[in-house]
Length: 175
Image (cartoon, rainbow, N blue to C red; front, side, top):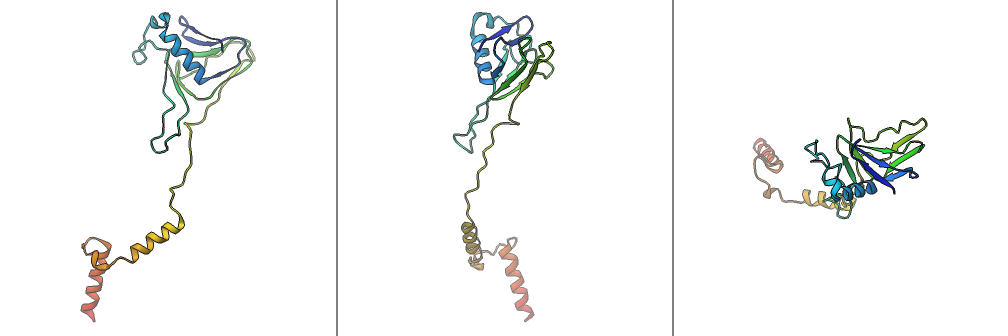
């Protein structure tokens, strides 16, 4: 994928003939360029980024679901944007989420009539739905064990067993 960094205009350029770019490819390219001598000389005006064009922030493993990772999230420096080449037509950036950019806009229009760039992204990461692992039979077994407990084991006055015991004692005094 032909990409270029325009340091003067602060643009990540997707050049002809490409009409699709992946977030991973853009991230890898920017990281390679920032490690090159010219990338190390960028102005560093935005202190949070210390001159970097972007920071990858994604692909974190979910601690509760080992092996499930978020999509890549690329945070673009607030002074920079991504722009396709003029006359590119319908273009897309896909395969992750891109945030940041100049005035919160990641994509800069080409200025050519008929060019449309779409940022295809999932709403906020990858979601994997799982059950708790507790079956209906497990729920019945738990309920049976709760109700089969001896009332003598639950005598703390603030517990449910303690309240039941005080009701039983009050009934005994009435009879």
